[in-house]
Amino acid sequence: MDYTLAIDGVDTTIPGGTGLLLLHPSIGETDRIDTDFLKTDTDNFLVVSTRTTAREVEQKLEHYDVDESRADILDTISVERGYSRRSSDHLHYVAAPDDLDGIVAQVESFLAGHEGKRRVSVDSLTEMAYYADVDGTYDAAEAILALLDGHDAVGLFHLSKEVHDDETIQRFRDLFGNVIDLDEDGEATVDLV
Image 1 (cartoon, rainbow, N blue to C red):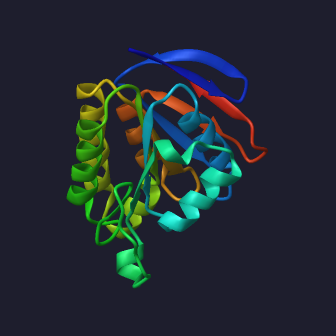
Image 2 (tube, rainbow, N blue to C red):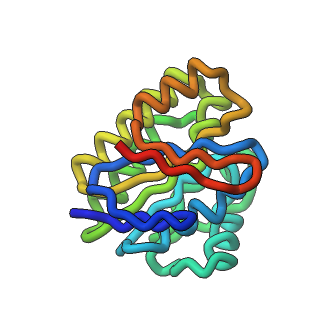
């Protein structure tokens, strides 16, 4: 199944199973790219949040006019930081951003539990690598890509250009192949294989 990709004036389609790497400056306009990705041509989506709480994700979706009834959120930081949590059918938690197996399992559960067009946003691989390590994060990204392929879904994975060395960035570029490169001025270059 094909999915519409409508980001920054790019209007094309990508096949199910595609993962996109969003390379961005540390302070970049990623919310706009992320929400454009999530709200277009989708039945259900999962936001894997390693930077912000579920409540902050909900506020972002509301601000960018994304249909929250289609959203599942995996909050990976509230437990570790001791914040109050309110579980629901659409809010999920793991202990911390370094619980890579738990994150992959939650993505698998979401994909298996929903029909139709499904999108996953992982925000961000950089935070996962900070809490765990680059090798484990790479393996988790690879596992999520395999799940997307197996469930005919698509995903967007955030990675900061300013935090990682060139070798690490190239390693993730090679894993994904499909890259959205966001510059400091907020302009996005989309490179699809």
